[in-house]
Length: 226
Image (cartoon, rainbow, N blue to C red):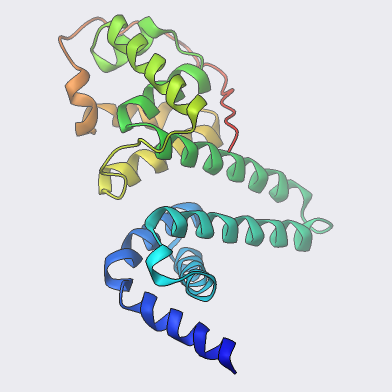
């Protein structure tokens, strides 16, 4: 009886923070699930788990994201188990999606939007620094500097991503990165580059695009440990 009351008190305490924390959790959950229906269910489940297991003052956005991610892993594993015999091909596609989301999540947590895009083009699609500089209309030195900072931050697992992680632009970049990795084709990301405000500060002058004659995009090889 005492435990039930303590749980109810935690739920009530966290409910008071819902207006502040739930919208960002919902956006992140929809990104993981790639649709609003499953995403909303995922956000609700994560919020309830947090309320059941943690004191309200210990619950942060980072903790809610971690819980939501773990919930999504559970959902993915359950679906894989249920569909293993009936639909092996969709399972392989779902596993690819899971890996892509995991990699993008890591990039978005540790890097700025500029660094995430540059790192994905370099490590995921094997573009050269010169080619990336042409795509972003910046210098090769600026690209190499961004790559160096990105690699250091990923190695230290530092949560130093963009302060606008919950912004519409960040969500758009995350979707573009995930789609590019899943399809093993950076085309949709490259088309959106001129419309991403966070990348404009890289532009110093227009240069000939070294990738304009590339017939096919490089093979996707991005692999990031969570």
